[in-house]
Image (cartoon, rainbow, N blue to C red; front, side, top):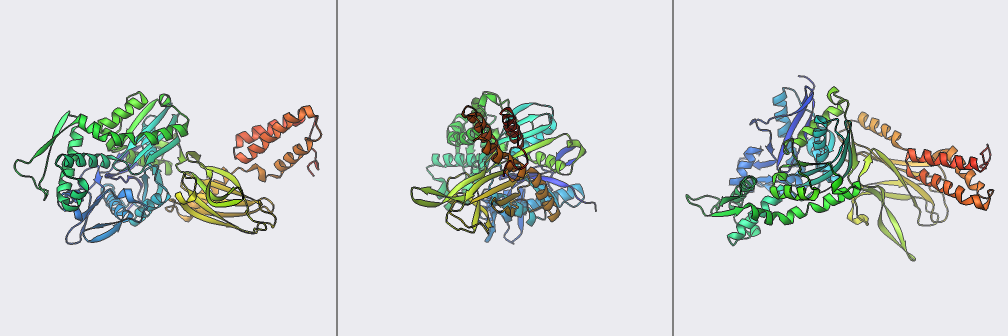
Length: 580
């Protein structure tokens, strides 16, 4: 058999899809039943057989205790899910869905499928991404790239509309997660500017709210009914999901109420639900969209009026209440020109084409951002007290990647010879509320009073590889560790190549002896110039020194040129030995 291609997989909370890029276009791969959507549901039959997809969804209605759904929400956590007397982790259940998709793809394509691009919510943290990577490996897949779902959706639109120039926002409300991503599109380039989201908000929550309201009309509570009458709730949930879809097209509908065993009589009681009721009940959930959208716009330094296009992604964006909210917020009509259930999988296939340098995408360029802040633990001083456990960001969220940034920390004790650099991910002020990623031990720091400097450098790339380097300026000694995060699908050769490319991203002009000499010369010249000229020279030195810290090549060259011009205008020119 031929070597298999890279498929794109949208591993969703409610449904999952698989796509392939071939003949110059992305296309969806049907499952064994001929459907594009495979329910992300796993069941265990009484004989121990495991079923996935539509069969499991049907089992969910009659034997809900034997079925698991919505387990994507628990990816990266210790939560275990019991079904049919067996216990599973969320990544184990996800691997069963991925394996089903892989087998369907192999049957459809007639060749082995070993490589995949898998999408995740943009706001998935490192543990959740690692769990997704592990699920892929358990399914027999080499996950070549983890890509954010809104980014994948944007790739689909960018592929079909390459010459557009606009600022757009992707509103991605799936079955269980919500993401919002702001991006610039111009001349075939897609530049992600900012992203935000919530991993516990999606269409399943809207359905649950409707179920709770219907139960309340029957003088019942959802929590107690789920415990006492699981079949009743499962069957009612099925009816509520259908009603939710119907109310997208009609003003009202009726929901039949089953008996406690989940069966319907010939004339079951019914509840009439109007679209206006749905809007009222869903309002608290819709309001939860506001905070991530505001954060993404704030990080992008944009107002709602500056967005030229709003793209809806995810099945839950079909809800009228959601559409009306988004329309009012941006004062424009959002659209979903590509099926919102399918657009992410298609984009994952486009990403696969980019990985293999397919000719059909050779004029496309995509940049992404780091969705979370990356930093280290530091000690803060309050009066005479030193308090550990505080967070110093090194790479801020929504920084375009690949990127390299530096912060300077210092020893806290006299003659301190070593520092354990604790690395974290998150936005909180204290590390206890952030996610630990790893540690780098720095040794052989020169003896001296407290305050000996150590330069901490982070370099992060599109594969999710984080290189952490500590530099001791007094000795020039460097310590390094590489955290592969969710890039475990890379081969040793690919990892080495990625780390090598990251070296080109690094720019630390302070390490250059010529730049150090220029700074020392300019500082000595302060004492030689007229008091009337001092402010001008000092401002040029400050700009140069600040630029040395920034890691921005263009700005550094501007400040270096400015300092040299200032020195020249003052009749000062550095000669060999002037910095001694």
